[in-house]
Image (cartoon, rainbow, N blue to C red; front, side, top):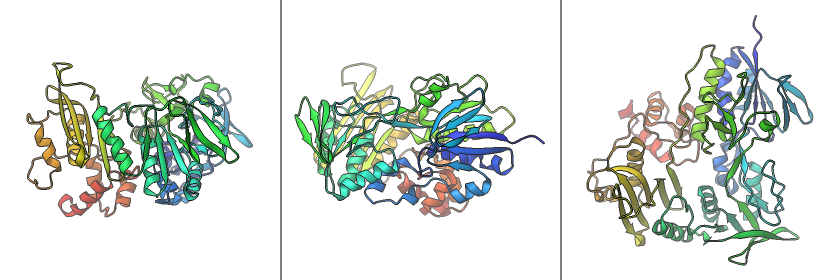
Amino acid sequence: MKRPEQIVIIGFGPVAASLVEGLLPAVTAGQCELTVISAEEHLAYNRVLLAELAIGAAQLDHLNMVDAPRLEAAGVKILLGAQATGVDRARRRVIIGNHEPVAYDRLVFATGARAMIPSLNGLNFDPHADTALPDSVFALRTVDDANKLQHHLTAGDRILILGGGILGIEAALAIAASGGSPVLVHHGAAPLGRVVDSDGGALLTRCLKEAGVEVISQVKATGITKDENGFAALTTSTHGQIPGGALLISTGVRARTELAEGCGLAVGRGIKTNQFLCADTEARIYALGDCAEVDGQAPVGLLAPGWAQASWLAAHLSSPTDIPAADFSASDVLMLKGQGIEVAAAGDVSAGFWDNPELQATVFADPSAGRYLKVVTRDSVVTGFLSIGLPQTSAELTLAYERGTPLPEDRSTLLRLDDPAVSDLGTAIPSDEDQLCRCSGATYGQVAHAVGEGCTTVAQVGESCRAGTGCGGCKSKIEEMLKKAPALA
């Protein structure tokens, strides 16, 4: 009788949890034995909701992504609080601090990414390790980070958020929603500077301030100052010292590659793999998720492609036959929702009215109502858009952008989608293949199938196809489909 294959996964984040779920039938059938090595003490949880955890809007068990008793009953071995320190490829085993080495036939790196710590005076920056940060300075990547944020919220501290990207904004809005005092500090002219133009950025800044977020733009941070309690102020060359009781760093992430590099694997922006997620020449080592540079493509930091990779790799490791490579690319549509702010953006909106005769720029602005729209098209096909305060228009543009379908000749008809007095406009109807959940990649068709199979709640739909299990931005769409369940059945 053939010996079960020993599969070892290093890391236990959302993508690893998805891979474990996909391998569970093979484990139950005795085809393989599965061991998961996690440096964290917690089972896999949804990092997207850490801000919700910090402000008390969610409980830790709501973030859990695995059923531990079910995995244990199937025979999955989970080593929590176990730090992998090396990989002995010659002997095919993982070296773990304070634990016996774990042997493998197939090894999967799912080590994810760590917060990128800027080079500031007072911070001991190390791009290849978890930087030891001073008291009251943290990122928002782990449950421990969420607990630190909660502590400072309880104390009523003024919390500085360094970084004007989507994660920094979402953290600032969550803090404001809890009654805290967030200060968003960033180096650009406006938050989301890479995707907004000057007018859209000005409106976004105003919307954030109205939501209770203090915004300080065009800041050049140089260091931090500390007192007996830890962080005391952010030192800048442009705005002097910006005082605060805590500093939340949100300046991007960097793939965890040092363990792979230490055992001789090629690394770049992540652990380099081919299109089949394979990182070595013997087809024994794989990488996926935020730590993997798949076929030359840098990690994108989104759940959807990571979960797609996990689904494919589970099938590949479980099947004796070759499985064709899959498309792991992700949509570049960015969405922000919170505190009454609705932003959607994609592509390039930098083109002006007369910059390029092949590009047509259309702009609508109603600052008093918090609405702004810029659309750039080539031959009526969207190449970029920015929409603020226009949710229905955003949904229409997202479908048109991802499908590559032309817009109506009269662009002003898009604006009427958000006019409550107009209800008879023909809008694009999502097809089964269109993406509904941007975190999981679940499509309208998959949600419709889940509803047709008898799911009656958002949670049940999430268990069926993962829709709604990420940031929660698509829950209203799922609820709408559940209400129409008789028609869908």
